[in-house]
Length: 366
Image 1 (cartoon, rainbow, N blue to C red):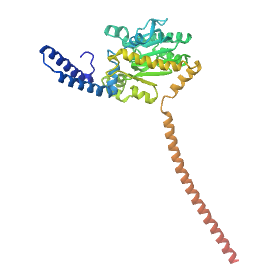
Image 2 (tube, one colour; image 1 turned 90 degrees about the vertical axis):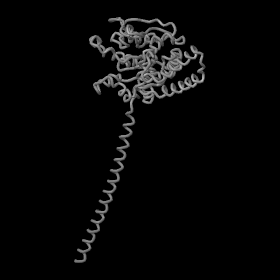
Image 3 (tube, rainbow, N blue to C red; image 1 turned 60 degrees about the vertical axis):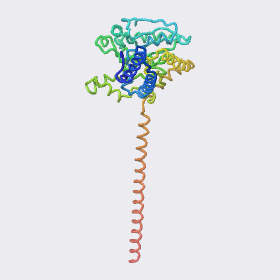
Image 4 (cartoon, rainbow, N blue to C red; image 1 turned 135 degrees about the horizontal axis):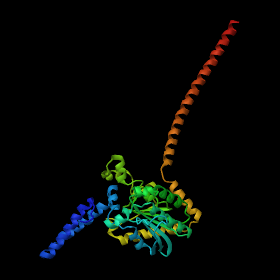
């Protein structure tokens, strides 16, 4: 079956058998109703078992599925009156980043996201969703404009990372990403970031500094792509599945770490199975969080964003552990000191008794 993932093969084989039985029943006039019903029941059971226990590596492949809805798919399904804006006003228009003005339930917003291609030609034009510096500068231009006119910002993240070629480095790739991080941290409007597919490296983080970071159930988010990590650790990008298992990149992992605020449910089989349902889920969750953020003042929004990223990490547990160790050591030291004091007290008492005996002897002799 086209675009099937390796782990989906048993399920797709079963579906194919059901189709063949139905076709044979129609052509030959043979009644296979019971067999078809039994296979369909087994198919539902297998589908639930398969998709309810996906491994991190399987979720990585799901996040990269060729038919997975893209930023433009979500924009057209969720927002009204979308007007796309182009260019960074410095060099060019990077098609790996799309963005513009829109309305979410009547509220004016600026929406920006990474855009992958739908086919080979489109992917080449959009650099497979990996932006150049002009893409990040376009995003920053739109966000700065949104901040000026007090429009909330919603970003959709879906990239393996920033474009790694010489042309991007020559035009200031790292500077463009760093500027986005700095400026997004200080914007005084609500910022909601949604990881809809793969969120990889600085290319994702350049659109990821928000008051709320949300993730689709089968999306992944990491400081480096599993392929890149495998290339560094084992000099072999084909070991990406092994890296994915170790990197804690799934939505479930990240919500436990406090890096994201909420997981957006996907239909069984992934977002591409029911794009309309998925878009509705994203819209409901984004709207709920936006309503909460709209009640905050400008200063509260900046402080909220600052506190969110300051809380990421488990340094407090380490401090607590060290404190417990130090406390245990102090207890041991206290016991040793008490023993020393007792011994010294006994020695001092014995010495006094000896002195008294000596004085008594001298008195007797006199």
